Amino acid sequence: MRSATSSTASWFSAAVIAVAVAAGGSLVAAQSAPESENGRYTMTPTPDGVLRLDTRTGVVSTCSNNGAGWACYAVPDERSALDAEIGRLQAELEKLKAAGPTVSGKIEDALPKSDSLKKAEPKAAENDRKIEVPLPSDQDVDRVVSFLERAWRRLIEMANRVEKDLSGKI
Image 1 (cartoon, rainbow, N blue to C red):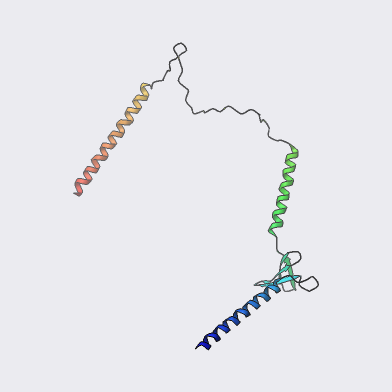
Image 2 (cartoon, rainbow, N blue to C red):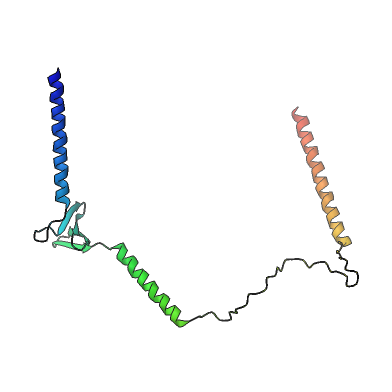
C-alpha cells in the first residue's frame, strides 16, 4: 500500500516538473527574437484573418484575404489620435493667446451687487429716527379674510363628507 502512495506521489511530482518546464519554455518563446532571426512580426489568428504585431515598432495591423490576395491594414491607434487632437488644441490656444483679449465692454471694477426682488427698507423719519413700517391696505386685509373663509368652508365640507362616509359604513 505504501508503494502505491509513493508511486502516485512520483507521478504527481513528474507532472509538476513537466508543467514547469512547459511554462518555462513558453516564456522563452514569448521573448522577442533577435533581429538576426526572422521574428519581427507576431501573428495571431482572428475570425476575419490574422492580427499582425510588428515587434520593432509596435504597430498592429489586421490582415485578411480579400479574394485578390492578402492585404494588411494598420489598426488606428487611439494614442496617436489623442496626441494629434492635443497638438491641434494647443496650437489653437496659442493663436487665441496671440490675438489678445476679444471680450468687448469688459470693465475692471466689480459691479455692485443688488437684489431686484428685495423690498425697499423701511424709511426712517429724519428727525426722530423711527422706523416706519407700511401697514397693509384694506384691500389686502379683505383678500386675506376671504381666503381664510374659503379655507374654513372647505375644511368643514370635508369633515362633513368624512362623517357621512363613516356613518354609512358602520
